[in-house]
Length: 360
Image (cartoon, rainbow, N blue to C red; front, side):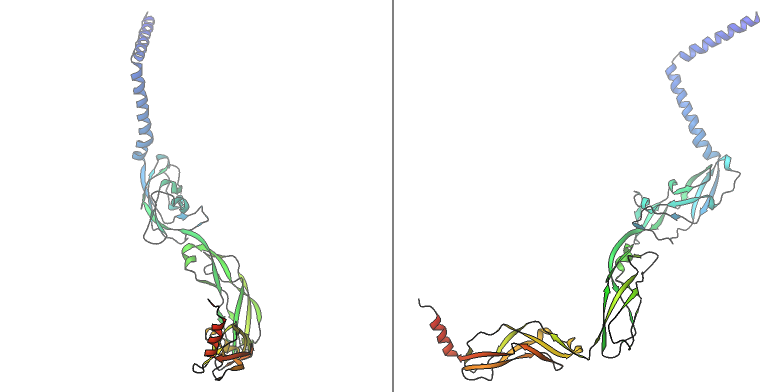
């Protein structure tokens, strides 16, 4: 009897719960979902941060690892102390953490694309904001709450490639009167490195060329090419062939001049005119010490046909003179060296011109 009463009470209780459950079921379902979400938030977010212990770790080194070969990142950059504020889960509280348990790695090529990266006043310096993605290594059960400072200055710049002239330093000297001239093959080298350094580079030096007073003839040699900074700059070759031409400037040599316009000199009071045509220019070869050629000014050299000594009409043979050479040089060859000229009175030449004019 007692068992039957208990059974009826249980059945009545089940029916009552069922009717309560199906009554206004949508409101109860929404309340249940909200309750589950609140439980999840408290269990996963609020409680771990509130119940976890707090620690601060100081990081003294940050790794810079660029994923771009077109970006130069100096390796000796210092950022000071980076402090990480940690929340340690209950499961990890029995462990003592050190800076070696954490690793901060920044990719400048990626940091360059961040919207919060700001250029600084110093050249090629950028202020990069640190975030959780920069922490590549941290212990399990540890959460980084904050990073101090929030941003650090990092230097980087583009890689540039330019061709630079080669320069050969010379040590020693030749005997008096001898000079040297260098011909390099190749004469330029390709330099690749940080853009600011490459732009500031004027020339690239080779190892010194040694000269002494026993050298009196041409010779060839190979010289090493020195990189301005082997840690940051690369050259496309490391040696150059050099041809050295030795010249005895006190020795006598010939020099062929460019064609020289021929000028005419007639005494203004002679009353004579030139009747025939003359060559427009002459060719000349001069002779003298090689050292005198260095001071030669081609603009001052003139070819002159001097007719100032002729005072009467007639046919004459006059020499062509080269002037403006200086005292150390002389004309070895002139073509033409002599010109035949016909001189007539000015009135006769005018009459001839009038008779040749057509009648109107």
